[in-house]
Image 1 (cartoon, rainbow, N blue to C red):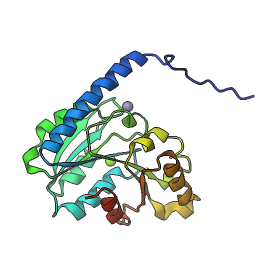
Image 2: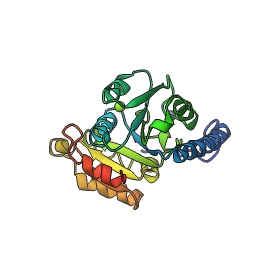
Image 3: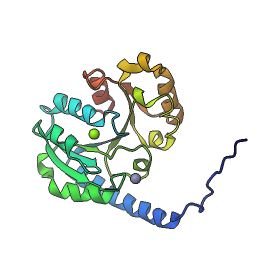
Image 4: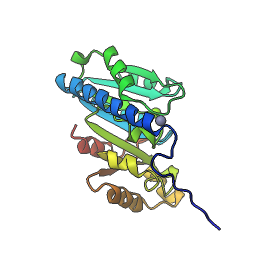
Length: 223
Ligand code: MG
Ligand code: ZN
């Protein structure tokens, strides 16, 4: 026997609270977007699970773009500064946001981070969200583009199980493709899943450890 309980609208506790919260977040996200636009800053948010390769992707893009753009980085993490330490070594202006128990960044936290950066001195901003494929989909931060990273090691259902984040993203990066054979994963199936959910999404396959595919991500983002 197999029973499935489907949560009806209004049945999840605090649904009203979360609707207000999301509305407030949207307003702040628009303000962030305007602020970045006013300063002529291109902005990209990177979402994905812990260990999918978000920071590696950013590090590889920074390596290739740091002559062309003055780059800033906002790093979201529950408690550590590992990622911001790694990126700041490249002469990038970094603001770390430790969210504590919160499993996502929101527009208010990003607004606070933007106050700490010298926006006059930046052309490009990367924002790494907390490692999570669920709530970041709903909480827009105000960036111009959104990237979702999934890696081969997360298994064959990572895309179909997280449709909302793929609906929200402009670019999907399938990382660690060098491990596809060892993991028995069909990369073309993941790609097809992403395009079925969001026909406008640009899918790029990468191996961020070696830099494979990074120029294509940069191209997909129009950078
Ligand atoms: Mg990271
Ligand atoms: Zn969350």
